[in-house]
Length: 294
Ligand code: GUN
Image (cartoon, rainbow, N blue to C red; front, side):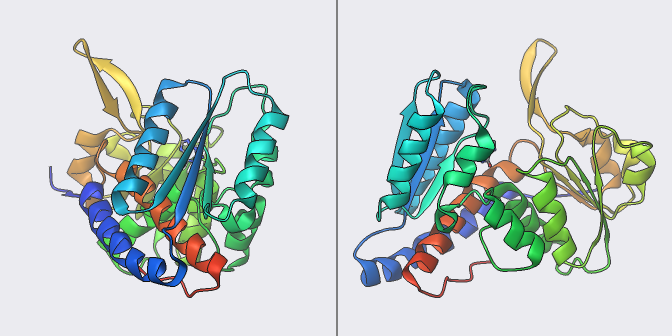
Protein backbone atom coordinates (compact mmCIF):
# COMPACT_ATOMS: atom_id res chain seq x y z
CA UNK A 1 0.00 0.00 0.00
CA UNK A 2 1.35 3.42 -0.83
CA UNK A 3 -1.61 5.73 -0.17
CA UNK A 4 -1.73 7.91 2.89
CA UNK A 5 -4.60 6.84 5.16
CA UNK A 6 -6.96 9.71 5.93
CA UNK A 7 -7.76 9.31 9.61
CA UNK A 8 -11.34 10.57 9.95
CA UNK A 9 -11.48 9.63 13.60
CA UNK A 10 -8.49 11.80 14.48
CA UNK A 11 -9.83 14.74 12.43
CA UNK A 12 -13.25 14.37 14.06
CA UNK A 13 -11.73 14.22 17.57
CA UNK A 14 -9.75 17.35 16.93
CA UNK A 15 -12.80 19.22 15.59
CA UNK A 16 -14.77 17.96 18.61
CA UNK A 17 -12.19 19.49 20.97
CA UNK A 18 -12.55 22.86 19.22
CA UNK A 19 -16.35 22.64 19.40
CA UNK A 20 -16.29 21.78 23.12
CA UNK A 21 -13.84 24.62 23.78
CA UNK A 22 -16.21 27.14 22.18
CA UNK A 23 -19.22 26.20 24.34
CA UNK A 24 -18.36 28.15 27.52
CA UNK A 25 -18.41 31.45 25.58
CA UNK A 26 -21.85 30.57 24.18
CA UNK A 27 -23.10 29.59 27.65
CA UNK A 28 -21.76 32.83 29.15
CA UNK A 29 -23.85 34.84 26.69
CA UNK A 30 -27.00 32.72 26.70
CA UNK A 31 -27.06 30.78 29.98
CA UNK A 32 -27.44 27.51 28.12
CA UNK A 33 -25.71 25.05 25.79
CA UNK A 34 -26.58 24.61 22.10
CA UNK A 35 -29.36 22.01 21.78
CA UNK A 36 -29.76 19.26 19.20
CA UNK A 37 -33.04 17.38 18.68
CA UNK A 38 -32.84 14.04 16.91
CA UNK A 39 -35.98 12.30 15.70
CA UNK A 40 -36.16 8.60 14.94
CA UNK A 41 -39.27 6.98 13.48
CA UNK A 42 -39.51 3.21 13.81
CA UNK A 43 -36.91 0.69 14.83
CA UNK A 44 -34.47 0.26 11.97
CA UNK A 45 -31.39 -1.18 13.71
CA UNK A 46 -28.80 0.91 11.84
CA UNK A 47 -30.79 4.14 12.34
CA UNK A 48 -31.13 3.39 16.06
CA UNK A 49 -27.34 3.12 16.31
CA UNK A 50 -26.79 6.38 14.37
CA UNK A 51 -29.35 8.31 16.41
CA UNK A 52 -27.96 7.04 19.70
CA UNK A 53 -24.41 7.97 18.71
CA UNK A 54 -25.48 11.48 17.63
CA UNK A 55 -27.18 12.11 21.00
CA UNK A 56 -24.25 10.64 22.87
CA UNK A 57 -21.73 12.80 21.02
CA UNK A 58 -23.78 15.97 21.63
CA UNK A 59 -23.80 15.24 25.38
CA UNK A 60 -20.12 14.31 25.40
CA UNK A 61 -19.18 17.69 23.91
CA UNK A 62 -21.42 19.52 26.39
CA UNK A 63 -24.47 20.22 24.23
CA UNK A 64 -28.08 19.51 25.14
CA UNK A 65 -29.57 16.50 23.39
CA UNK A 66 -33.29 15.90 22.90
CA UNK A 67 -34.11 12.47 21.52
CA UNK A 68 -37.58 11.65 20.18
CA UNK A 69 -38.67 8.21 19.05
CA UNK A 70 -41.98 7.68 17.23
CA UNK A 71 -43.44 4.24 16.43
CA UNK A 72 -42.94 2.63 12.99
CA UNK A 73 -46.67 3.25 12.36
CA UNK A 74 -46.45 7.03 13.02
CA UNK A 75 -48.47 9.18 10.61
CA UNK A 76 -47.44 12.31 8.75
CA UNK A 77 -49.51 14.57 11.04
CA UNK A 78 -47.94 13.13 14.19
CA UNK A 79 -44.43 13.71 12.85
CA UNK A 80 -45.24 17.20 11.53
CA UNK A 81 -46.71 18.15 14.90
CA UNK A 82 -43.48 17.04 16.64
CA UNK A 83 -41.44 19.11 14.16
CA UNK A 84 -43.67 22.14 14.88
CA UNK A 85 -43.03 21.69 18.62
CA UNK A 86 -39.28 21.49 18.07
CA UNK A 87 -39.35 24.52 15.74
CA UNK A 88 -41.01 26.50 18.54
CA UNK A 89 -38.73 25.23 21.33
CA UNK A 90 -36.04 27.82 22.07
CA UNK A 91 -33.73 25.26 23.68
CA UNK A 92 -33.51 23.47 20.34
CA UNK A 93 -31.03 24.96 17.85
CA UNK A 94 -30.84 21.99 15.50
CA UNK A 95 -33.35 19.37 14.32
CA UNK A 96 -32.39 16.16 12.54
CA UNK A 97 -34.94 13.63 11.34
CA UNK A 98 -33.12 10.37 10.75
CA UNK A 99 -33.60 8.98 7.24
CA UNK A 100 -34.87 6.78 5.72
CA UNK A 101 -38.40 7.21 7.10
CA UNK A 102 -41.03 4.45 6.96
CA UNK A 103 -42.75 4.25 3.55
CA UNK A 104 -46.04 5.90 4.63
CA UNK A 105 -44.20 9.16 5.41
CA UNK A 106 -43.28 11.86 2.88
CA UNK A 107 -39.61 12.60 3.67
CA UNK A 108 -39.34 15.76 1.62
CA UNK A 109 -42.47 17.24 3.19
CA UNK A 110 -41.08 16.42 6.64
CA UNK A 111 -37.67 17.95 5.91
CA UNK A 112 -39.36 21.01 4.41
CA UNK A 113 -41.34 21.52 7.65
CA UNK A 114 -38.15 22.05 9.67
CA UNK A 115 -37.34 25.71 10.39
CA UNK A 116 -34.43 26.36 7.97
CA UNK A 117 -32.59 28.14 10.81
CA UNK A 118 -32.56 24.77 12.65
CA UNK A 119 -31.80 22.60 9.59
CA UNK A 120 -28.48 21.22 10.88
CA UNK A 121 -28.80 18.31 8.43
CA UNK A 122 -28.66 20.83 5.56
CA UNK A 123 -31.38 19.00 3.63
CA UNK A 124 -34.12 21.65 3.60
CA UNK A 125 -34.69 23.10 0.11
CA UNK A 126 -33.67 26.50 1.51
CA UNK A 127 -30.30 25.07 2.65
CA UNK A 128 -29.79 23.26 -0.67
CA UNK A 129 -30.72 26.44 -2.56
CA UNK A 130 -28.37 28.60 -0.51
CA UNK A 131 -25.53 26.16 -1.20
CA UNK A 132 -26.27 26.15 -4.94
CA UNK A 133 -26.49 29.95 -4.94
CA UNK A 134 -23.16 30.38 -3.16
CA UNK A 135 -24.80 31.88 -0.05
CA UNK A 136 -23.63 30.95 3.46
CA UNK A 137 -25.85 28.38 5.16
CA UNK A 138 -26.06 25.00 6.84
CA UNK A 139 -24.44 22.28 4.73
CA UNK A 140 -25.35 18.59 4.74
CA UNK A 141 -23.13 16.80 7.28
CA UNK A 142 -21.53 14.02 5.24
CA UNK A 143 -20.40 16.23 2.33
CA UNK A 144 -19.19 18.86 4.79
CA UNK A 145 -17.11 16.22 6.59
CA UNK A 146 -15.74 15.00 3.24
CA UNK A 147 -14.74 18.54 2.31
CA UNK A 148 -12.95 19.01 5.63
CA UNK A 149 -10.96 15.82 4.95
CA UNK A 150 -10.17 16.86 1.37
CA UNK A 151 -8.93 20.27 2.50
CA UNK A 152 -6.76 18.61 5.16
CA UNK A 153 -5.08 16.45 2.50
CA UNK A 154 -4.92 18.82 -0.45
CA UNK A 155 -5.08 22.35 0.93
CA UNK A 156 -6.46 24.07 -2.17
CA UNK A 157 -8.66 21.98 -4.46
CA UNK A 158 -8.71 24.61 -7.21
CA UNK A 159 -8.51 23.28 -10.74
CA UNK A 160 -8.72 19.60 -9.78
CA UNK A 161 -10.92 17.18 -11.72
CA UNK A 162 -13.42 15.69 -9.25
CA UNK A 163 -15.95 12.92 -9.71
CA UNK A 164 -18.83 12.34 -7.32
CA UNK A 165 -20.39 8.92 -7.78
CA UNK A 166 -23.94 9.17 -6.44
CA UNK A 167 -26.61 11.86 -6.77
CA UNK A 168 -28.62 11.75 -3.53
CA UNK A 169 -29.79 14.95 -1.82
CA UNK A 170 -28.00 13.65 1.30
CA UNK A 171 -24.52 13.34 -0.25
CA UNK A 172 -23.99 13.44 -4.02
CA UNK A 173 -25.69 16.72 -4.95
CA UNK A 174 -24.42 18.84 -2.04
CA UNK A 175 -20.94 17.29 -2.41
CA UNK A 176 -20.82 18.35 -6.06
CA UNK A 177 -21.87 21.89 -5.09
CA UNK A 178 -19.17 22.10 -2.42
CA UNK A 179 -16.48 20.89 -4.84
CA UNK A 180 -17.65 23.40 -7.42
CA UNK A 181 -17.37 26.15 -4.82
CA UNK A 182 -13.78 24.94 -4.24
CA UNK A 183 -13.11 25.55 -7.95
CA UNK A 184 -12.93 21.89 -8.92
CA UNK A 185 -14.21 20.74 -12.30
CA UNK A 186 -16.99 18.41 -11.19
CA UNK A 187 -18.62 15.39 -12.77
CA UNK A 188 -21.62 13.70 -11.10
CA UNK A 189 -21.91 10.03 -12.00
CA UNK A 190 -24.75 7.68 -11.07
CA UNK A 191 -26.30 4.29 -11.75
CA UNK A 192 -27.06 5.17 -15.40
CA UNK A 193 -23.59 6.59 -16.17
CA UNK A 194 -21.88 4.95 -19.15
CA UNK A 195 -18.17 4.06 -18.99
CA UNK A 196 -17.79 4.81 -15.28
CA UNK A 197 -14.30 3.25 -15.09
CA UNK A 198 -12.90 5.66 -17.69
CA UNK A 199 -14.50 8.64 -15.99
CA UNK A 200 -13.14 7.69 -12.55
CA UNK A 201 -9.68 7.18 -14.13
CA UNK A 202 -9.53 10.85 -15.11
CA UNK A 203 -10.35 12.19 -11.62
CA UNK A 204 -7.90 13.74 -9.16
CA UNK A 205 -10.59 13.54 -6.47
CA UNK A 206 -13.04 10.64 -6.19
CA UNK A 207 -16.00 10.81 -3.81
CA UNK A 208 -17.79 7.46 -3.81
CA UNK A 209 -21.33 7.70 -2.46
CA UNK A 210 -23.68 5.27 -4.14
CA UNK A 211 -23.94 2.63 -1.43
CA UNK A 212 -22.77 -0.35 -3.53
CA UNK A 213 -20.16 -2.51 -1.85
CA UNK A 214 -16.74 -2.24 -3.57
CA UNK A 215 -18.26 -1.16 -6.86
CA UNK A 216 -15.34 1.13 -7.70
CA UNK A 217 -12.33 -1.00 -8.53
CA UNK A 218 -8.82 -0.18 -7.42
CA UNK A 219 -7.57 -0.32 -11.02
CA UNK A 220 -9.88 2.63 -11.85
CA UNK A 221 -8.07 5.00 -9.50
CA UNK A 222 -5.67 7.49 -11.10
CA UNK A 223 -2.19 7.29 -9.53
CA UNK A 224 -1.96 9.85 -6.73
CA UNK A 225 -5.72 10.59 -6.62
CA UNK A 226 -7.47 11.41 -3.34
CA UNK A 227 -10.28 8.95 -2.61
CA UNK A 228 -13.11 9.66 -0.17
CA UNK A 229 -15.30 6.62 0.43
CA UNK A 230 -18.73 7.44 1.85
CA UNK A 231 -20.16 3.93 1.48
CA UNK A 232 -20.65 1.50 4.33
CA UNK A 233 -22.06 -1.89 3.42
CA UNK A 234 -22.15 -4.94 5.62
CA UNK A 235 -20.87 -8.02 3.75
CA UNK A 236 -19.96 -11.53 4.84
CA UNK A 237 -16.36 -12.62 4.10
CA UNK A 238 -15.00 -15.97 5.19
CA UNK A 239 -18.06 -16.38 7.41
CA UNK A 240 -17.50 -13.03 9.13
CA UNK A 241 -19.64 -9.87 8.79
CA UNK A 242 -17.46 -6.87 7.95
CA UNK A 243 -18.03 -3.29 6.79
CA UNK A 244 -16.75 -2.30 3.36
CA UNK A 245 -16.99 0.91 1.38
CA UNK A 246 -17.99 1.69 -2.20
CA UNK A 247 -14.31 1.42 -3.21
CA UNK A 248 -12.21 -1.75 -3.33
CA UNK A 249 -9.90 -0.54 -0.58
CA UNK A 250 -6.78 -2.73 -0.81
CA UNK A 251 -6.25 -2.29 -4.55
CA UNK A 252 -7.27 1.39 -4.56
CA UNK A 253 -4.74 2.09 -1.81
CA UNK A 254 -1.97 0.89 -4.17
CA UNK A 255 -2.79 3.69 -6.62
CA UNK A 256 -4.29 6.50 -4.58
CA UNK A 257 -2.26 9.29 -3.01
CA UNK A 258 -4.61 9.33 -0.03
CA UNK A 259 -7.71 7.33 0.86
CA UNK A 260 -10.29 7.11 3.67
CA UNK A 261 -10.70 3.73 5.38
CA UNK A 262 -14.11 2.17 6.09
CA UNK A 263 -14.83 2.30 8.98
CA UNK A 264 -12.90 5.21 10.53
CA UNK A 265 -12.94 7.61 7.57
CA UNK A 266 -16.03 9.59 6.66
CA UNK A 267 -18.34 8.19 9.38
CA UNK A 268 -16.82 10.01 12.39
CA UNK A 269 -16.68 13.24 10.36
CA UNK A 270 -20.42 13.05 9.58
CA UNK A 271 -21.31 13.02 13.27
CA UNK A 272 -18.85 15.79 14.10
CA UNK A 273 -20.12 17.94 11.22
CA UNK A 274 -23.58 17.64 12.77
CA UNK A 275 -22.16 18.93 16.07
CA UNK A 276 -20.42 21.71 14.14
CA UNK A 277 -23.66 22.65 12.38
CA UNK A 278 -25.55 22.69 15.68
CA UNK A 279 -22.99 25.09 17.12
CA UNK A 280 -23.20 27.33 14.02
CA UNK A 281 -27.03 27.28 14.03
CA UNK A 282 -27.08 28.14 17.75
CA UNK A 283 -24.88 31.18 17.13
CA UNK A 284 -26.77 32.38 14.05
CA UNK A 285 -30.16 32.04 15.79
CA UNK A 286 -28.87 34.33 18.52
CA UNK A 287 -27.42 36.80 16.03
CA UNK A 288 -23.84 35.96 17.14
CA UNK A 289 -20.95 35.59 14.69
CA UNK A 290 -20.35 31.82 14.41
CA UNK A 291 -16.86 30.58 15.35
CA UNK A 292 -14.70 29.39 12.43
CA UNK A 293 -13.45 25.98 13.51
CA UNK A 294 -11.93 24.50 10.35
N1 GUN B 1 -29.31 8.65 7.30
C1 GUN B 1 -28.06 8.35 6.93
N2 GUN B 1 -27.28 9.45 6.96
C2 GUN B 1 -28.07 10.47 7.35
C3 GUN B 1 -27.84 11.86 7.56
O1 GUN B 1 -26.74 12.40 7.39
N3 GUN B 1 -28.93 12.58 7.96
C4 GUN B 1 -30.13 12.01 8.14
N4 GUN B 1 -31.13 12.79 8.52
N5 GUN B 1 -30.38 10.73 7.96
C5 GUN B 1 -29.35 9.97 7.56
